[in-house]
Amino acid sequence: MNAHEHLENVDRDGWFVKAAATMGDLGNPFYLEERQRDVWNEASAVGLQLVLWLGLGTAAAMVWLGGTPALPYAFAVFVVLSAAPGVSLLYAHKLGVHADDAGRVLRLRLVPYVVLLVLFFVGVVRAAPSGVFGAGFTWGAAVGGVVALLSLVRGGLRARRREQRGKV
Amino acid sequence: MGRTSARGRRNAVRVARTALGMTQADLAREVGVTRQTVIAVEAGDYAPSVYLALAIAGHLGGTVEQLFGEELDADRPGLSNNQKASL
Image (cartoon, rainbow over all chains, first blue to last red; front, side, top):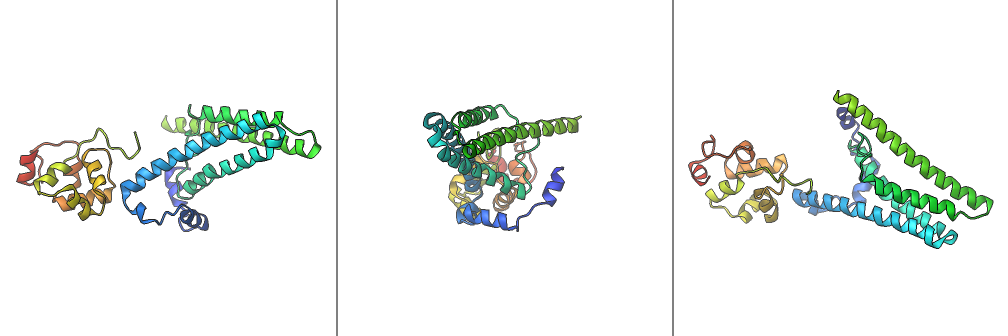
């Protein structure tokens, strides 16, 4: 899909974008001043990245230090944490900006996130309860996480290859 | 450096504004932004949107190309004599 097709699919009037704009208070007069808006957007990106770092680190530390009793809380942190970039990516996607394609995903700065994610999932498996249901759930979540991670890397590699073919 | 930065690009906003005897606060009020934004634009720390650039150019009596084009010389057509003298 090229940039032109992205713009044709902009969904500014959809319920999700409207709800997200309300949640983000995007109608605030503060956003009318363009430099304030731009700087605040940058500041929000910094805040989002920081929350991801701290949240992933916290979730990983919880499963390693707290063991099995900490698993539900660590998963809760992880799910809440996943919502932030998820909503951001979806909002951007709805408005025709695909932050998760074009090989942008695969950058060196992704490495610390991958390390923290691997630490988290290894910690989850290590702290997995012995009961059938709990163990199954934990293993399922861990395998799902690894599959999602591999899909992310695979998607990034494919996008990068597409981009390189386009440059030739 | 943030994405809003225009560092490395020169502009003639300060020259054109002072030539007209306007303060940064005057220009900010006229184009509907904060004084800090005018300061950032003049310093090359912020690349204004095309609409803000048009508003600034309109209020300073020039064109966007004259104010934000890379070449800033006194022979550029379109600038008033006062503005040329200030360059």
